[in-house]
View 1 (cartoon, each protein chain N blue to C red):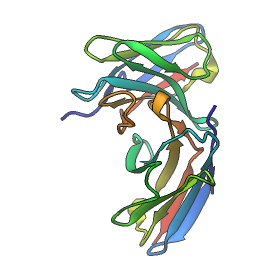
View 2 (view 1 turned 45 degrees about the horizontal axis):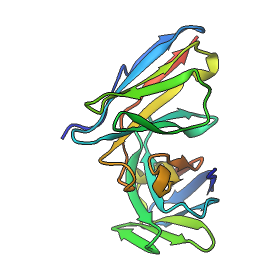
View 3 (view 1 turned 120 degrees about the horizontal axis):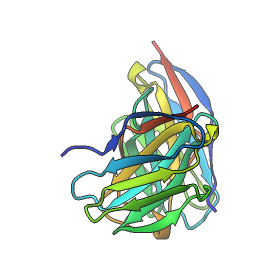
View 4 (view 1 turned 180 degrees about the vertical axis):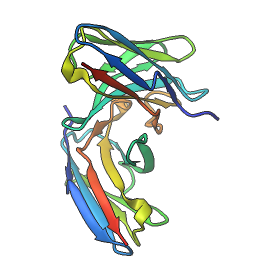
Length: 113
Length: 114
């Protein structure tokens, strides 16, 4: 089955700097890659997603890139703010089992003022 | 639109008991997936339902079961509870199945097994 690895497990950045989180997946049939942000005690919330027919997607300070050949995708957060502090999860799924998101282990991001 | 709701929000049970958790999807959403979240194992897929049919099942023992009703509401049941079943159980709903629609998560049910 699909295996998603996520690095780093923790990431400390200064406010205003950029943060990058990387994920690799094992199943070449995976074609949907969402990123979720989970604040302490709250539900995971989708922040951005990308499908396999797209190489890059951007939404304000957040961007995701996908390299299908290497089977890895990355989340980029620019101009980080204290409210970006949270746990970020990458995930992967595919068409015949799209509702079965396989999650990475998560990255604890801490933005210090 | 109201978001995904889950009841109860907190539950304390003892080993050997059974528990039923409920999930109401966003109005109009027909697919529901369930996940278990623990500090050690992270977010793990349990099962997904569409049109009252289980479409996929994760790698959990048979003590974990679920169902979906005609109004898309879903329940999951855990029988013969073990200490290791203590976790946050999250359900997520999406509009349809097979279209990589966004999954929206509920607030979760925090289950503690003593």
